Image 1: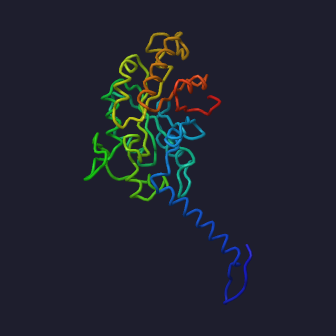
Image 2: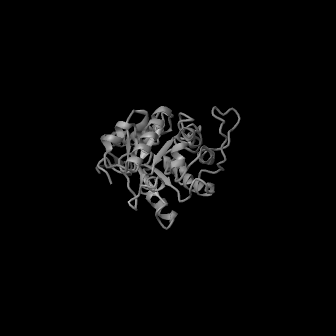
Length: 284
């Protein structure tokens, strides 16, 4: 850095002042841009609105507690590693919790939303009622004059570190911490996993739940539920393929996010209408 003497101290050279001012303005503009409803914080929603698919480690990161010793600290650390000061995280963090649809999990969802999670995945959801509970848990109670009051939320105050994590002011966070696409300006994704014949039978009712962003097919558990394991999971069994196609058609009909953990043929899934993949474009 070049300095000039004068006035009993040191002054930064005028040219450098201009450079520094431009840099500061650039950071300020980026931060202010994130406050505007038209600028997405959630990259999965951003991709979907542009007609594109969202891939893990490219647009979002899949953080799962279902096959682990349930160490929440590890998830929070992984989320912290994505943080960019004053801007949205490098990747959108979406957390799969270790509670099935029939269980009570509201306390855990609040914890992850408060540290900045932008999406929650609940495994083993089989009914519309179970999906609706997720939406209610992720929403704040409707306030006077709310544009989208139903279904009424049950999330409690306060948002903790989430506003700073998203790169937003506290007020902007409250405005945008709602479920999409029910609230077009919302940045939260309520997602459920379809892993049984019962869920397949109820797929239209599940996708009709206001505030539910979409579903993800769990082909391993689905194959076991359908009785076509060998004896373990058989992800490409004809019965699983048929069920997967049923889910894809329903998602397209409802204009909902459709995700899958079966990524051996991404092109096939894209052609079916799948838009959400937890792994990079090349597979696991």
